[in-house]
Length: 255
Image 1: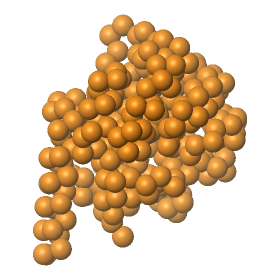
Image 2: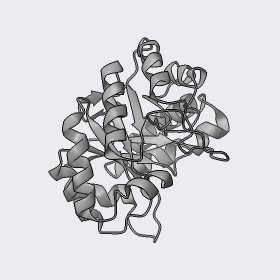
Image 3: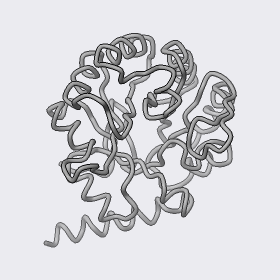
């Protein structure tokens, strides 16, 4: 049954829409604005072990490093909203170090960012299913908080194999793309189907209005991350989307 306040990997969300990592979510000021907006969660910029500078990057890995966010999380938690800490690195050990620190600081869910090109260059998580399984077998048991793996738009082997590898290593949730590259099912829909619904899916991208959101949610996706609309409109976009989604749901009931 469609819910606008879902539970994902044991984490209860007051609302099913949130920002995507990197969308106005780097600095203290940006994250506090998200914390007191209508967003259902606070999703941080992808965080690396230390300061990472990437000239020209807009929503990539440029961030002040894990210590900045460890110190900030207690203040964010006072808003009473779930915190999804996006984590990145160049080795499995990087991911473990950052994820452990953020989980101990109070992050409710850890997003493992396997979407970023820098991660692909250094870690190659999708070189094979065996490589993906080995990396997640190192990360999953070492992190106390629940984990969601963020996929790249294109994976070089079948999505059922991705789903099987993640399920086998104890991953409960996936962040997958809402847009279709070939006119078929979206990546989010394909992961849901491939896992038989055992992987809980947060969709990302392709949503800018309430009717878009309703279409994605009706496919079985539990929550949605918003990127471009947040950057374009600011955190006030969540109040608009909440109204539009409520209107779309009411219209659906009337029909």
